[in-house]
Length: 288
Image (tube, rainbow, N blue to C red; front, top):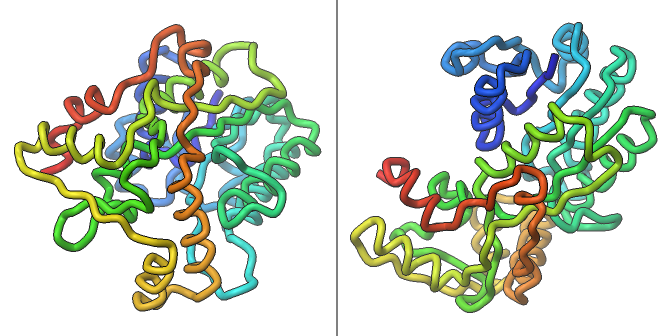
């Protein structure tokens, strides 16, 4: 039995469908019962901040997809909530006799990293020390961010970027889910970290061009410096430390640090990951 946390999110919804296709027993861990029912598959209601609900959800489970919310604004100096939340799940899984955890992390998770990078690194260390068999997924930026609007568009509909010519090898969450399904249902991949990317690295100018073609309207790109990004966030009421960390990571993307591509999706699943054009065609309706 597999427990899928984050089951109604960008990765979880794809994973739920994939596990159903495979005919593998699983249950979705959701906070909202209405969203759980909408999945059309077995679900349990719980919360990472509710230890009793976690313990109840883990009954009869032998494998877990550990996935949760990303970095959120916190008072300066306060730890990211995901750290305590995911450690709580790992500890409960150990007590429940779970055999394997597949954790969704971030690419370049590392000690001392800003926000999600440092938080996921700390969680990873806890998982590795837990005695539970583990696999780590380190995906690059999600293609889905372009229709959820996660910090990608300005108020006039233009794309914003730290640099218009810095490539990023974005990945479709569909391919992250397919990779996770393999690690949750097959024996390989123990104690391994998989860096997951799309098949190509695109600049924001290239992304805008492809969006323009699919949406049949011109999508512009506006370059935003790290300083401008930090100011923008602070004006929105974001704590200064969080805003500065976001700006630091923003500037780093502008150096092309997220441009490499890997073959890990193909190695795991046997098929190549979706291109950005494939993603846009499949999800055209989501852009309105």
